[in-house]
Length: 323
Image 1 (cartoon, helix red, strand yellow):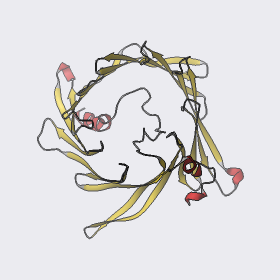
Image 2 (cartoon, rainbow, N blue to C red):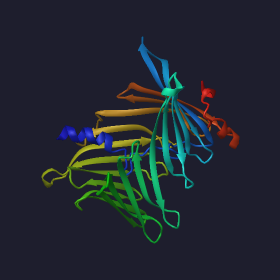
Image 3 (cartoon, rainbow, N blue to C red):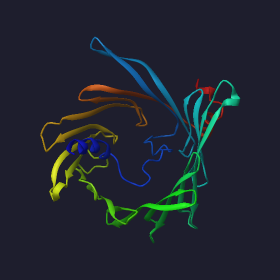
Image 4 (spheres, rainbow, N blue to C red):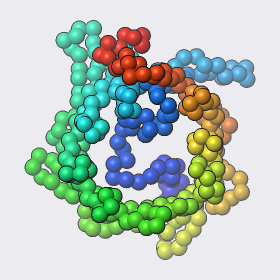
């Protein structure tokens, strides 16, 4: 159980919990991009180590093109594989067209991932349906709001053919400077509670064996450190199993993640990231080290728009402009 907990927390700690946390990021802001980005080319670089030197040997490139409002318009994986993103008047994603081309145009394959929405008279979303690619199995999110226009409750349903069953319910409670999200199962049992305050976020799993406390040790706009503590609740006793300390740079990106067992003074696992930035504050190079060993090399090239025509230039069906 102990090893399972340690493995699980490496995935859980950096994330936040919502019922819709698997959605694809389709906006410059969600992707953390700054400035009038028309195109970003992400390069997953291959490299080799020889004679004490590390050399880049190639890369797998993905191009993302944006509309002027910041929404993602296209993602181009190769000359024969790309996605197109379409939105409604509220700016919500209604479908993703995944297109794969063959030499014979008659054999091109297009799969369409669809979403449906309903809105109230104030323009607030009251229902979102994730229809998937084939629409036979649907996940629906039903939203309720308080008198201040903030979300008060989200109900999650699975719909298969004509059968509709509730799988989860999230209740939002707001306090001065804080927010609590309580997640309940289809049986009405509380599964998880997340409280976000000014200086601390607590995440407690009600049905398992752990809770996580995220404490800002330096309450700047971008915290210099954040201490994430995993505690067990086995046999009703709390025992500190793991502490993860996050260090940020002035841009708000994590540059170091140190994992400590049982309150030890020396970390057993350290992730370190080195960033290079452009004048807009977007990183153009990222080198990830695990215990001082380079494991990931990513580079990004940006094309910034000077006017609306620059966005239109890169959002056409003809993608040969990139190749």
